[in-house]
Amino acid sequence: MGITPEEIASLSALARISLTGEDLAELTWQINRILAYMDMLREVDTTGIEPYTCGVTDPAHLREDEPRPGLDAHEALRNAPGSAEGYFTVPNVLGGD
Amino acid sequence: MRGYIALRPSLLSGEVRCERLVGDALDAARRNRDLNAFLEVYEDAVERAARVDAKIAEGTAGPLAGMIVALKDNLLMRGRKCTCASRILEGFESLYDATAVARLLAADAIVIGRTNMDEFAMGSSGEHSAFGPVLNPRDRRRVPGGSSSGAAAAVAAGIVHAALGSDTGGSVRQPAAFTGIVGVKPGYGRISRYGLVAFASSLDQIGTLTTTVADAALLLDVISGPDPFDATTDPEPATRVTDDLERPLGAVRVGLPREFIEERLDESVHEALERAKDALRTIGTSIQVVSLPHLRYTIPVYTVVAMAEASSNLARYDGVRYGLRRTAATHTELYERTRNEGFGPEVKRRILVGTYVLSAGYVDAYYRKAQQVRALIAREFTDAFRTVDILLGPTTPSPAFFRGERLHDPLTMYLSDVFTASANLAGVPAMHLPVMDDLEGLPIGVQLFAPMRGEGLMFRVASALERTLRQSGR
Image 1 (cartoon, one colour):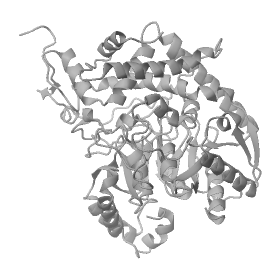
Image 2 (cartoon, one colour):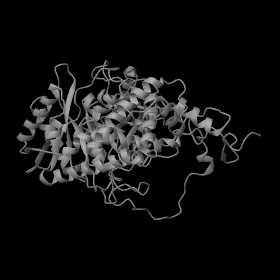
Image 3 (cartoon, chains in turn orange, red):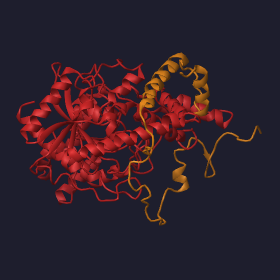
Image 4 (cartoon, one colour):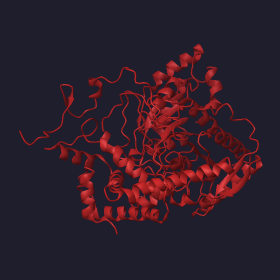
């Protein structure tokens, strides 16, 4: 039972958060307290209960698919920290240069 | 600032001008800067006020003409910044209006600023903002509640008539309770979430913060209704709540869930509940104790569902399309550094827990299990509403607590939502109504719940209750 600081480190890799400068011991204590509280759910008999996934009765209620004006590329890129020639830019994905 | 409706006749007669109202509001915001309620105040709102004054003079003004409004900083308004009180959205500027905001503006309300909040709406005290804590105008040593902290503080301090917030587990109702105002979370699907920054999409709902029930009704009617941009809005046009507000109640059956009274409550919260019960009897409603046994699992279910959805929703903050970017040699490092430096501790905690409950090997034990218990809670609400029309309960276990008191113990903080989060789990409408001040002068009130699409009756009961409590001199 319980989650170790090592497991938290691997979770943070999954969540793409590097966690430098965090107090890993305090974080481990806090997350374990939260998980232990969630464990209360184990005592509920849920045999045959359909999971509740959506608050609406008709989630497939869609609008007509009609063309309409939207954001143009220039607008869509306005908030980007890096862009060039109408594209978002990121560091090289495939190895060095 | 008194309620908007009370002021409306003098606005429409030209006796009071919007320009002056906005000037007063901006002054009040400056005087109350120590509250840290606003992240930005729009000085140019004065220009909009002049245009609304002209429309009033022409007789073409909308139903909210001259209503001074603040927005929680997770609602988009075209051309304005929006940060969710997070470093990760540094510099972000909205490219379009949220549907609720567009409707407010079309009705001639005047937005004077965006308000501070717990980062990404994750918190119950206003202390989890990247831009410093919000103070409670009723007692500056205490928290204003959260996560719509600045929105509630701005209304309670009389800076604005109203504010829009968002409520995922109580984030409108709990700060309304801590600051002594009216906070409404409508039923899921009543207000479009288009342009509301997503936290937990199956729970999030925009809500209103006002000083009176009538102002909340007016505001709700303007912003409710189907929206082609949000497929989860109720496709049926929303019935208006304003028209029937004063209609006599008739025989209304109110239920008090046993599970609520069995929780540990402050003495003053008990007293507020008793006073509300007395007032409800005065207006002719009957009160009975009901039981929703699975309510005791509200917080564990809420925690699993909200964190799982948050970990997924917040994956979009990656330093590529908007907001903060930390430079790095590889794209993975770019994500990791940006997210580490951009998110605050509470947001990281929730993303980590959410990632855990969704990871292979745990998804059935936690996420699926929580969704099943959520189904049981929703069913118990449906069943309860077969025997009663309205449910009554406390909003918070205690009045506003001191700053710093719960900051390092997240679980204790989460338990602040023990009475509010069930409405989000079941999707039903709920609202907070102030009842009294305790011996220290802190406001306390009660919460009303209604079945889906039951906002009309909920508002009529709230309005009658408000009138009765006022007459008995609260």
